[in-house]
Amino acid sequence: MTTPLVNAEKHEGVLLLELRNPPANTYSYEMMRELDAHILDARMDESVHVLMLTGAGDKFFCAGADVGMLEKANPYFK
Image (cartoon, rainbow, N blue to C red):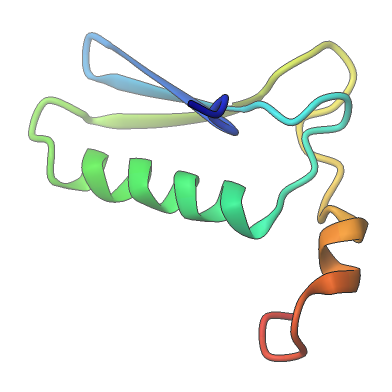
């Protein structure tokens, strides 16, 4: 099993979504798919009223796209 790139925890109506791709929490296609899935799940969950998006670590929320991933991505994705 792979480590999730987006951690999700629900607390009293709040869904905390944490980007987890150290050290800078750069996003990739895989991270966006995980984030989309959590947001859709929250949309259909009547107990969720708030989404909070954070980044793991002390320095970065999200430094942007994973440049290595973009170098390999097809032009349509870019």
